[in-house]
Length: 261
Ligand code: ADP
Ligand code: MG
View 1 (tube, rainbow, N blue to C red):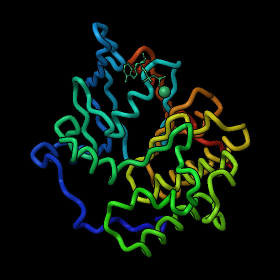
View 2 (tube, rainbow, N blue to C red; view 1 turned 45 degrees about the vertical axis):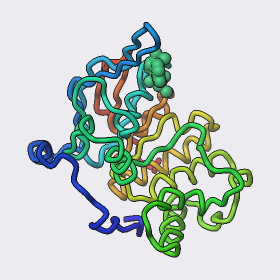
View 3 (cartoon, helix red, strand yellow; view 1 turned 180 degrees about the horizontal axis):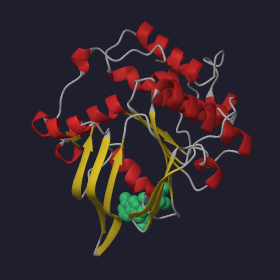
């Protein structure tokens, strides 16, 4: 898949082996049990997530919907190991994220998670190839291999021949595809995209969703997409609705209609 082989087994390490057996056996990639996230703003407590329980299997394509301020980004940040729950438990591939140290969280993130944001977050005046290569700079891979992986990831999102372009020379849709390539270069288990089409026109949005659909269907990548738009959510096979920090609906949908991907 992708021609981006799994990182050398020597790089891998196992967090919380003691806790992993049961949940590995259960097989779900993501298990949240009564997860809360509470922000303390001076005297004010903001309950951004209020008891979220959720299970996501490997290879799912999930849309997360909900009004602004409902807790979607907070949930994505937790699932992406950028943050830990205030209460409750989050197992990622059998590992108890709440018990991980900061270093272990960083390691989990770099091995398991690819992030895509609304604003692309590319490094300006830096080529598409170098942008895509960035996550690999701490891995100690030979430069040649880093470049090869980055080039393969760019090709996977349909950006062949654009390796040397700067972000400013690319359209919004192409910049977002560079960001997706950067997220893929470390062969993550999960791609988390927080409103990836929020800054894009309809046609570019469609392109991005088709790229994500291909990665999900052909490479088996687990994809979670936050969106405001019903039309965007129709690409996913499952739709989760968040309201006031809680999941109020979780349903299987038809997924992308035939001919779309
Ligand atoms: P969404 O992505 O659905 O718009 P967020 O997850 O960003 O919602 O925010 C959920 C709630 O948590 C909001 O009330 C927001 O103001 C609050 N919030 C988010 N991040 C922080 C933070 N770092 N500190 C304090 N409050 C926050
Ligand atoms: Mg948000």
